[in-house]
Image (cartoon, rainbow, N blue to C red; front, side, top):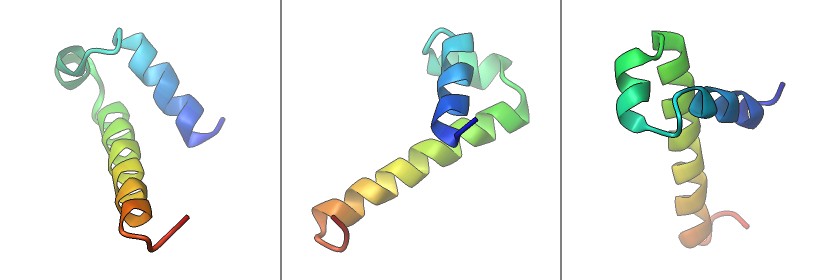
Length: 53
């Protein structure tokens, strides 16, 4: 299972709610989702800055 699929499964489990995720998710689930979000934000910033296509 790819990281994206794993995050999608976790997010669906908590009904796409950050409140439910932060209150009810395990530490590993929360860390996985936050890491994925941070990685995607960093990638987007590199694209905007012209460092990556």
